[in-house]
Image (cartoon, rainbow over all chains, first blue to last red; front, side):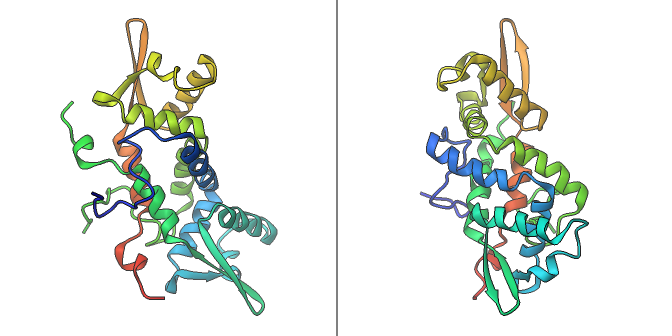
Length: 118
Length: 118
């Protein structure tokens, strides 16, 4: 039976060894998170009022060029971490909560293992 | 007040934008997870009976050389994801649960945001 914080797709990696295929897919998602600007972009999008942000709001906070930000947003999108849509002049981005939940569940330490006496 | 699944160090990134320093530190941890062999190694160590594994148990499951496995274990150790200790001939590895819990909490989608109506 699944606990309340688990997603059907991914049991915690602490419970049983990851298979090759799952590891390949998950490592691509973690690779997208392995850059500090991408992490901050993802967090900025996720914490935006209403859960989505215009690309025009995402450039100001960073000291890098617009093409660099666009490249990082593309990496996040291709990794399945954000969705996007053009509306008029601007592209809007939002976080795909299932993707974050999947990674979070994978890294979760079941209470029993985490608190087992040494 | 912190919820039961949160670690004091890291609120979910969905709640507020990550700062530069936190993003730099976290991106190094995610980088260690961005390789499929390292993910499988971490999972294998974590799911080992007793929570720790001898390096001698970690080579068999992979079709790569022992030095390659040792390199990946070093990356996991330097990222603060596993601890290690030499005992006699072999080095033993275990997962550092606080590190996994920190990343898991960071990626957690608070129930309210995840289930908000569109």
